Amino acid sequence: MTPRTRARRRIVVTALVATVAVVGAGLYWFQPWKLWQDETVREALPGASRQAGAHTSGRGGAAPRTLADGTLISHEHSTSGSVRIVRLADGSRVLRLENLDTSNGPDLRVWLTDAPVREGVGGWRVFDDGKHVSLGELKGNKGDQNYAVPPGVNLADYTSVTIWCDRFDVSFGAAALRSL
Image (cartoon, rainbow, N blue to C red; front, top):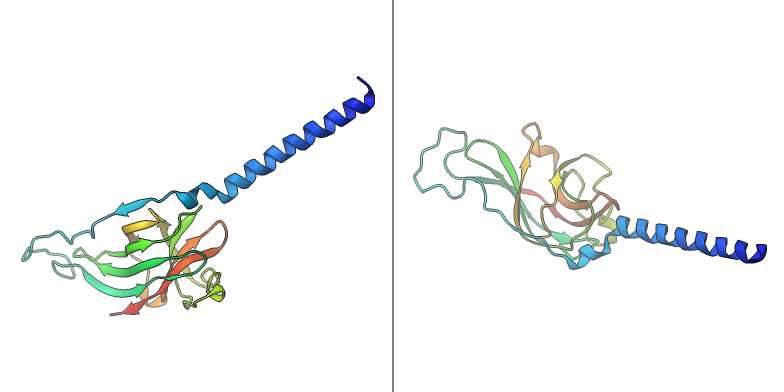
């Protein structure tokens, strides 16, 4: 084998190794297979199954009480469903997503934010510009699910909810909160 042939072979092998590394990193980063994988979650609202007339000693009475609500709009991905913030009989609060339908994706979070909800591309990236609280990873891209609101969070400071893709800093969908 001539030195020229060896050099060519070395260049080809190096290029192949680099290509495999770049493709592998791209697949890890973008996770395109998630676009075809739905995860449906069907959680009941905590405390909603109590029998009528049951006695509780917690603040707020026997039945959960809705404090705020909103309707999800689409941003980067088609998104629909509704959002409620509910005070439970024990005084704790949960953010509830109902009839959620969005795309799956990498690193999706549920955030309470102080950003205004805007339609169109102009609303996709505003939610990390101000104050926000992550309530955790999105449990599934479809269905009904609950997220605990930390006790120290002042709900008056937050006006919206977003399904936020932390990896790409973009909102899949969001809802303006209307206090009740």
